[in-house]
Image (cartoon, rainbow, N blue to C red):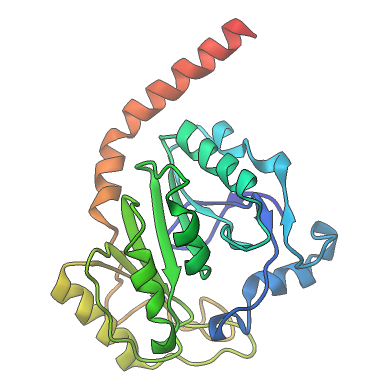
Length: 258
């Protein structure tokens, strides 16, 4: 299974320079990525073991349409088994493709902070952490230390009520769990996060209620679709023609010098 367009509502494409992971908190219990590797074993000969895919590193350079790219939907870029040298190569590709937005999500908040000063945080990087219940709210404090253009929270699967400090947070995604063993999300949990976001002027995105399938419960919260994006996305969309022009010039130059 390679990088592709996706049905994930808050992004346009996925890019998986690594696949595989291991469970670190309750949100991982029914991991959808692990289930995919078990279903499509021919595409994942290493199963769900952490695997580097160097052959995929240059893929975003071939995607000419400016896109929001979810990095490592099948893994965690800050997994302890991802070499720092490989991580730097991923960030270099991000630097070389400013017409895209890269959405990176991790549960490895400590390694994220440990390595942050050694990485270049280009303006097209959105950095997020997963927060599934109040026991993992400390991940937000770590995220605040990261000099990313956009810092966001993924509260999916949402497994309990959250009281959030949204200082220096730009975007919050909420979603319920899906799959045969899904754990239901309560209405008041989602409503509370939405209200906290509204109060603090933070963009709120309600992804799904979840259920036996991701679409089973729909996306309406109090009769409304909540598809808010951080202001940085609107600014990026205004600039994307400039990015495309830059990209095309680089392509022509490369062909002439080849």
